[in-house]
Amino acid sequence: MKKFLLIVLLVSFAFGLNAQKPSAAPEKTRVLLILDCSQSMWDKWQSDAKIKVTQKVLLNVLDSIRDNSDIEVALRVFGHLNRDSYETQLEVPFGNDNIYQLQSKIKTLVPNGANNASTALGSASKDFPRNNNSRNIVLIITDGSSGFDNKLCSEALHLQQSGIVSQTYIVSIANRGIPAEGDCGGNLIAVESEENLGATLRELFFLSDQKALVALTMVNHSGTLYETEVPVVFYDHGTHEVKYANIYHYDTEHVIDTLVVDPLVNYDITIFTNPPLQLYNKHFRGGEFNRVSVVAPTGTLNIQLKGKSTPFQIPDYTYTVHQCDSSRTVVHQSLGKAATLPEGIYDIDIHTLPQISLKKVKITGGSAKDLQIPLPGQLALTKLKVPSSGSLFAYKDGKLQWVCNLDSSSEGERIVLMPGEYQLIVKPVEATTYDATRTARFSITSGKQTAVNLSK
Image 1 (cartoon, one colour):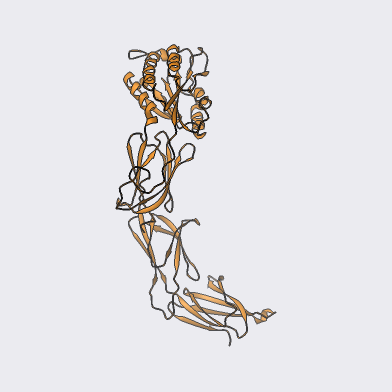
Image 2: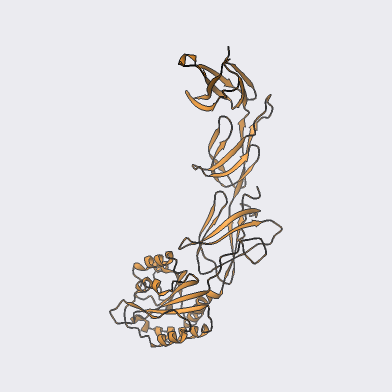
């Protein structure tokens, strides 16, 4: 079934398919520098003290973005107030044409106090202007020698979920290292040399000028791409906000389409096949073509009648496939027509009379599941000679299970039923006592007609 599943090659402007455009890019990027000025920044690193190397590199990087109106920078510092202080301070706020102010402040910083990155990160949310038209980045530069306290993870998570910050980067200089748990504060980048520090900071600053190209392909177990028409939604992993929503249609005559996304955001992706497929916390590199291939094995399900010849007309039966132990419908199909399904376990309702329910049917990728149900039989019912009402029941395991009500306006009925034991309960419409109720037990055989006469 070509349009059920699966190839998703995500949408945008680049290759000319009909697709919804991604949401507009923010007008500018705001980078909050959080700089470590604890006592350990006086330690020597290659050519000079770590603070001196960091100051020199930052001054050069700020020079390189001086004329870029799409980037705004602010400076928050910790460890510079006094030896016993864990306080932090916003030294230079965001603003246009503040590069000279930033450079002047950076030149005068003197490491003096203690290391507390989590306190600085916890104060970062109020540093950004309340402007929805910007992408906000936190960039922490630290030697990490005093480690991080346990609040770092919770502060980083709160900042991300607030929707204020798109991404947090931690640049660990001198490769002294941040403990593994420190990575919860954002993307951890260990820098071993002065040269690498400059290259790393320039790359992070210029992420604002980059976009990530993404093509997500869906293939079956054999690697075959499928023709499909399916919605795809990108969510911000931190805030769960919808960032891009598209409907992609692919066929073999078209070139692979590409979605342009913000590389500063990590994404959760939902592909609305049946059942939906999901990818979590996906990061796409800016300035590159990012290809993601998702394997979704599929098999086929085909349900048919066992035999075809009957002296009466068989109804056009259908069947419904549900997710196992769920009411969620995966596909509704005519009996005799195959359904393509993702590999998995399903519950199936076959809409015969009475309904046949199959539980925990396994569909295996690359395989066909063929099922047969028996031919129905037919009840030829002659009713009472007076208007009457009644119901038909299946007799199973010593109990009666309701199947359908009879038509009180007709003198006879023809009802197509699955093979089994049945019972009729009928009562004249005008009867006022239970004595007038009639019952009849009978059997239905595949392909045969069973006559029941209640008028005798």
